[in-house]
Length: 134
Image (tube, rainbow, N blue to C red):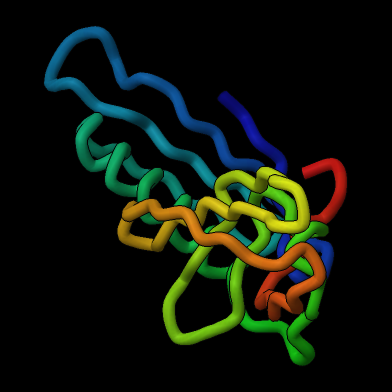
């Protein structure tokens, strides 16, 4: 698998991940080729999974980083993936309108899930608003 990545300054690099040689211990080969340097190493499949999990977690943290100005939306306008502003990470899992009320199912960063009823026009402050098409 080969992926082109860019840094914050727009420099391109290529990340290649492939199974290691057929003989010897099970290995995953990782190669990063960039404009200023190249890096390569191999690791066990378990270590490669740990690396992938760490990258997914870091991406989630970056996406959920607090913007300069939180956004306030009406409860009836919440979308799956919206992140509530506050001390604890709460992500909208589902929204169901029930007459003048809105039932929102939230999921915590720890994987716990619960539902809460709101008036449709209740203001909900969001840390991160889902962008359309995501």
